[in-house]
Amino acid sequence: MRKKQMKIWFLIPLVVFFGLCVMLYMRLGKPTEIVTNTALERPVPTFELPLLSDTSRMVTNETLPKQPFLMNIWGSWCPTCVVEHPFLMTLEERGVNIVGVNYKDEIGNALSYLNERGDPFSMSIQDKAGQFALDLGLTGAPETFVVDAQGVIRQHIIGEINEQNWQERVAPCLMVLSSASKSGNTPVASEIAEVCK
Image 1 (cartoon, rainbow, N blue to C red):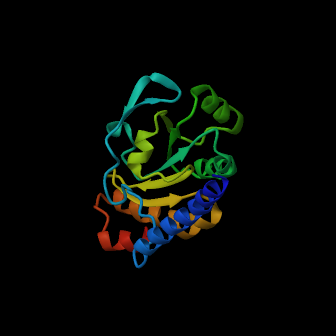
Image 2 (cartoon, one colour):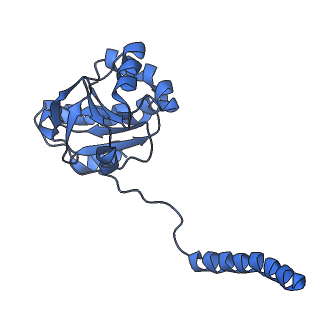
Image 3 (cartoon, helix red, strand yellow):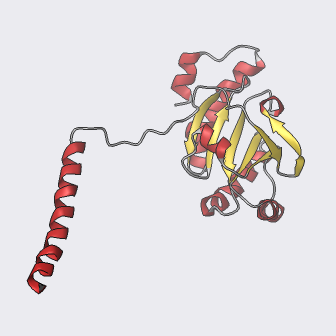
């Protein structure tokens, strides 16, 4: 009886190992990168969510700025958001319009966060369930989307914005979109593809 039990315990790891070998073999030659469903090159997904500072007021696509802006996904629980926050304050001082999306946060914690660190956002949308951020293509906070005057998402920055990626990626994209907006033109697709990549 004891020898039978030992044989069974010996077979279990063997079966698990064999199963793993079969799974790995089935994945051979298939792409390994994860493709996220992002709203890039599409309008900001339709939403109706409360304003963080006054939850009795609802924000919709119609409420969003009518000129190019940044949409920043943040949360008081997010350590990288704390690291990014001083630079967002710098951008606000430079006149950059930033709409905040407070992701899966408690309202009291979010408001305390802004009271302590300053509020760089022209408005903050409360996305307590997190569905709007997921519709945007969020992979994890913080993330920032550059949106043109027509409400189309032109760039997606994963992780924090800092001086380096601001100068190299975000500012040139925002500049092209702002220039097109001021002249009343629709941004040239090839130019956007080149500058906002």
